Length: 577
Ligand SMILES: [Zn+2]
Image (cartoon, rainbow, N blue to C red):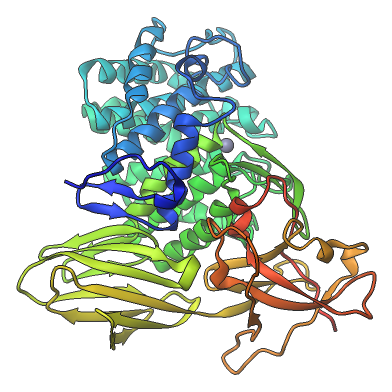
């Protein structure tokens, strides 16, 4: 057992697992959000503050979404506890205090109306749906008859309400521009119902989940977090029933999101689908990330892994505030405007909830090989071989793997070569090692020894991306990162009239890459949550004084976590003719 204490400073971060300590960017980012939820603020997640929506006691915003914060809090902390082996006493405390707040009919909060369906009913459904999955995630960590009985009574309440909310007239009525109180308040319950079926083997919860899944559809101005949560539920339905129609439905809706232009190039889903795109939402980004990881796990279609990675290294990391919160940022044609909101009432908790899923997706096991998929921290094992990866991709474009268990046999390690890497350079115990090139991967087969250290160096490509709708603008990517210019680090780039600034791009090289030079940054810039390995020097002509060309440093959008809230970013540039 590792001797593991809560670190006093973030420079000593590590995630204590049964078999070792993880250290790397993903670990630091999860610790940042975990620390925010447990010890940060304002507002602080005190027991009373969390439970106010379950009482309900209308002492903070959004308590009418009864069970929303309570459920997310239980689910996020329970899932992190399960993954990391840490114990959170406040989690058990909140669960104990929650149970007596349940109403006689099984729900939490103010009463449902008895006539028709009002917006307040949809808000109640939303919060109680989040609470059902949160309760069951807590029950997975600490199974007790009391918690399961509470979840069952809440599930029974949904079964009782089923005919009322499955009514096609209600579906139509709430599939307009109701956004947070739209029909998604009903469809997002699927994942909780499937989890309740798993915990109880009671088929009635699965039947209701199937009815709701049939009624799940994408429409304009829909709340993306609700819709993608519903899709995650439908994917869970497939995992439980193995009925292909549910997987086909999720994949068709995934295609529809992309075809409708609702996935922005930096891997962001807008809070509200077209034509209402205005800002991002940490919850939607976390859902999209988890949905893609789930689809990758079920299908091994690389498009899902590529999209999960795009969102992770760009929108998801960007969305995380330096406080550890997640939330909203204003999207513009240029990039990101100078407004943001830390959404403690949903995104902060839902963002934290996503991290364990990412750690679990670092590796996957196949019968004949262990595969390292995402260049992040994580652990992977097959019979006869176990590895731990610690990623320093943002610092030196590498990930280091250590063998923690090995038997006498030969085993194959498959290292994914992403489209953003031109080559993988390997060093085993300090000596160069040549792997066997495969389609989109490099494989190493050998008799591994405990303690072997394999360093995988990703050769980063620099790519130009035309704007999907505006032919006058381009974006620049290095490795997995979307690059931009922010007003805190480079105020002069935004000198007026900044819309007239023109970037001076070199011609593409023979491989189609953009040969911009790396940029070193002098001085006291923080390294934490920055990705200096991707910094590039970009020459440009300022809009107001083109006679004096300048050079600016391009930084990954993910650097937002290292700068102030509401920092303006330019991501889409106009090249000089
Ligand atoms: Zn949110």
